[in-house]
Amino acid sequence: MRRWAWLERDGAAFLNNLEMLSRRGGQGVMAVLKANAYGHGALWAARLAAGAGAAAIAVATADEALSLRQAGIALPILVLGSVPKEAVPDLVRAKVALSVHQSGQVSDLAQAVSPGETLGVHLMVDTGMHRLGVAPDEAATVAAALHAEPGLRLEGLYTHLATADSDEGAANAQLRRFSLAVAKVVPRPPLVHALNSAGILRLRCEVANLVRPGIALYGLSPFGEGTPPEGLRPVLRLFARAVQVHRLAAGDGVGYGFSYVADRPVQVAVLPLGYADGYPRQVGGKAEVLWRGKRHPIVGRVSMDMLAVALPADHPVEVGDLFTLIGQDGNEQIFADQLAALAGTIGYDLVCGLGQRLEFSD
Ligand SMILES: Cc1ncc(COP(=O)(O)O)c(C=O)c1O
Image 1 (cartoon, protein in one colour):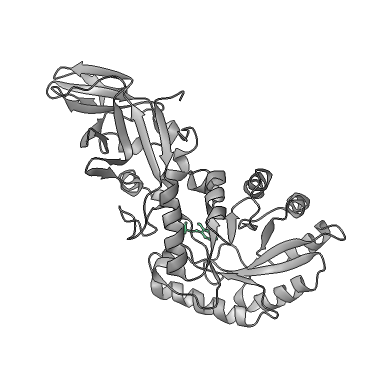
Image 2 (spheres, rainbow, N blue to C red; image 1 turned 135 degrees about the vertical axis):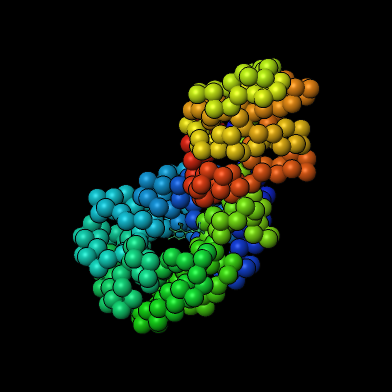
């Protein structure tokens, strides 16, 4: 290990979550591994998902899909995001499916596919979120146009819910619009999917045969709660070792701006990670970390590459001591969602950022 700050990921927890979501959804799983599997490592997650019998993988960009294929992932892959037609030949070669989200794409895509080749597509229906998707009453016509193109194979129909975490009535209204739209598509493609993590945990979509979880696979809450929903286990842990320990007298300050000044003798352990590692700058003076099974406050500002933890003057803390920033130590546990809330954001945002400079120890 070249750095005393690192991430760990719990494969058994990931598999537990995948299994739980598949059981709860009662359908096959299209595992959402975009943004490097929400910071957890897309290839790592894809191998686990493939081994556990996931039906497919979803990513956001053509590059995310291609790098999984190049690394040998054979599962069906769908790009959820909008892909420029210039990327189509690479996706055809890699047998990656893409999303059709507006009618104008049909002829562009058909032209981008060479004779004798086939591009798999899923038609995205906008049932109310007004991000990507064709209108529900347009779906049957666009599906017919896709069916009519020999180079295109309509493999799926899907929609995405705006409020599965916050407004069940509005989410169910979206699902009703989706069911009506699906019923009009003839012939119906083999894959139909709608529910994200919050939807799987709270709603049903009878017309679908796949669920599409992201955040819950990683054991975070889609509801903005501090702890994971029942039955799910956090996958990611964040650790660091103290690289320096100071004994401070009352009146001594720590870090930029001296935003913390000791009011009694304390020790300060310096940990070698900061906001450039995705550890939120906003939590300086607010968050805690674990040392020997107890909580201790982060003091002063979180800087780009370092942060400081205050410990009582009589504790035997030393350079090299292990600190848990996300994870469990003894009876204490810090969840990513709790840290995110302190930073004024959501767990999704926090974990996506953590994987960018920090490395996994495995
Ligand atoms: C189209 C689509 N489906 C599924 C998901 C997974 O959502 P979640 O992480 O809330 O389960 C996302 C993520 O935002 C998405 O954009």
